[in-house]
Length: 355
Image (cartoon, rainbow, N blue to C red):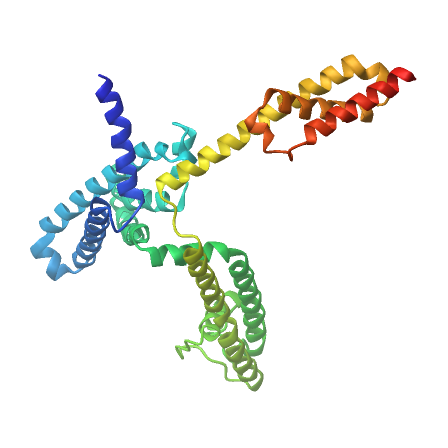
C-alpha cells in the first residue's frame, strides 16, 4: 500500500515532465514530441484530402478512422495534462491549480483541437457541421507546444500586443477615412463600384494591403490621387506589424539565451525559496510584534512617546536574536549590533532612572 502511494505521485510527476518539458536527454519526452507532431500532420492531411470528392470516395473510411484515432489520442493527452499539472508549483492546488493551467494558451489550444469533434457528435444539425469542421485545422496549433521557435513567436506576439493593437487601430482609422473619401469622390461616376462607404472599404483593404486585384479602381482625378497616396501609405503602414513582431522575436531569443527554460526541479526550487522567505518574514514579524508589545507594556511609561517605544522594541529584537543565537535572524544584521544595542538600552535605562 505504501509503495502504491509513492508510485502514484512519481507517475504523475513523470507524465508531466514528458508532456510539458522537452529535453535532449529525455528520450520519452522526445518520442512524445515526435509522435504527436506526426499525428497532427497526418490528421490535418487526411482532413485536407477528405475535401476532394475523387480522393474521399476511395479512402473515406480510412479518413474517418484517422479522425477517431487522433481525437482519442488528443483527448487522452489533454486529460493527462490536466491530471498531472498539480506537480508544478504554479498549479499545485488540486482545483484552482488545474483551472489555472486550463487557461494557459497551450492548454486552450489542446482543448480546441478536440472540441470540434465532440461538437459534431453532440449537434444533430448537419448544416452546422461543415462550419465546425473548419476548426479541425486548429490542431496545427498543437505544433506550437513541440516547437521552441513557434513558442518564441507566440511569446513575441504576446509581449508586443499593445503595439500591435495600436497599429491595427491606426489601420482601421485610415481605412475608414480612405473609404469615405473614395466614396464621395467616385460614387457619382461609379455608382455600382462605390455604392456606399462599407462597399468602398473593399477597395480600401485591397489598396492598403497593396494587393490590387483590379476589380474596383478609381477613374476620377481626385480618386486616382487619393488612391496613389493610400497605396504609398499602405506600404509603410503594413510593414509596421512585421517590424514589431521581428523586434519582439529578437528580444525573446535574447531572453532565452540569457535565461534558459526552467525544468520542473528549478520551478520547485524557486517555490521552496519563496516559502522559506515567507516563513522568515512571518517569524520576524511575530518576534518584532512581541518585542513591541513588551516594550510598550514594560517601558511605555518611562519612554514617553511611541517613537521611543519603537526604538526600544528594536533594541529588544536585536538583543533577543543575539542572546538566543537564532541563525535565521542573525544574517539580517551585522555582528556586534546586539551588543551595541544592549549598551544603548542600558544607557537609556540609567538616564530614565535618574530622571
